[in-house]
Image (cartoon, rainbow, N blue to C red; front, side, top):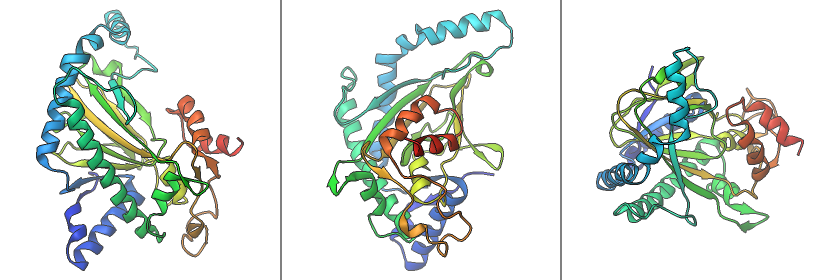
Length: 314
């Protein structure tokens, strides 16, 4: 069993090709919560530059710090004991987050220029995908984007962040997790993962399934806020990253999330029982995204349902 791989260029093809691609994306959102896009419109030349600057950045600016970190010291101490215990409540991950207004790495040639260009392309792709989701859900064009960007009729601007992660080779990968299992808090996530080093898995029908590395694809997944807006038709899916003994896994995840001030609730059109007869009328609360995030940061690696219950009480 493998997650769907979709040729995104067919969305601009014949009416038959477009309808088939729309159905594939709907299936990816409804049955998997994850899918991979090929021919997504982002040039291979840009993606090759992204790979280079992120790998260079880790070697030049992060590798030494990671190797001397408390995480690695704690891991080495545990490994020496040979007790079989796992290192709990930590991730074998080096990570930074790029925003429009925070400090970026400055010692890696070409990093800022390349990642600025890449983020602009990813944001456009995210907004195209959200329009496709609108159409598949029977919502007005621009509904999801508006829900994420507008607060009381004013454009507050959605959050768009990019997490640059590396999962260095681990001498005893059975003793630690690369990234613990979780669902994503926000909206739409676009991941450019390593071409060769695997480790990402999703939970599907009670089984952990590998998200196979495929060169220059973009992996898409839906977060908790898309689940709420779709009234449960689209699900946020549990996923994790395994530590590996070989290769330094590169992972570049971009998050298109609501403004912290945005109010999130199931779309009114999806509360009508005729449009979603298999779903409860309103299983999700209405809340401010910032309130949800306050709960999420404390409960990220726990089941999501109590988060929805807790935020409804805020």
